[in-house]
Length: 168
Image 1 (tube, rainbow, N blue to C red):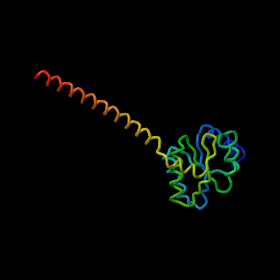
Image 2 (tube, rainbow, N blue to C red):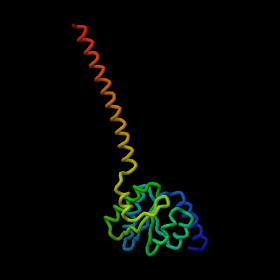
Image 3 (cartoon, helix red, strand yellow):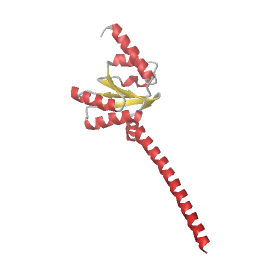
Image 4 (cartoon, rainbow, N blue to C red):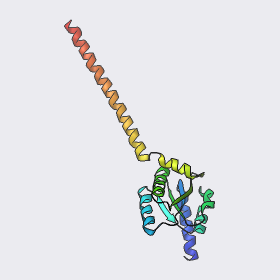
């Protein structure tokens, strides 16, 4: 990579990171090319981006972003996954790390706050935004059905009462 290409990479990566809320750093030593391809697919399906780059370039790209606190993690064969959805990205990384012991999650950051491995695992255990939306919609529709059932039941009771009183 030429100097101009490196500068362009750092500039583009920095701009991308400024617009993201969540980043996970991991070591990938020992992963095969097919393992990395599989990880990329898993990350991509979580609407996230997986990237491997030279540590010196990544550290430069972290400058003036909310992920600058992670500078110290960039030692050895380091990769990053980033997105605006911390839960999906965490799930993808943690699930892959469970399947393949060569991926070692080092830490992460969310909105400028550094996260340790346990905090990333907690994020991974949360339901996704899609699941939460589905649950909210289910609760709202269940409430509407309950209200309609109650109103219809009261109307039926009222009609029976009127009919019974007229017979007397």
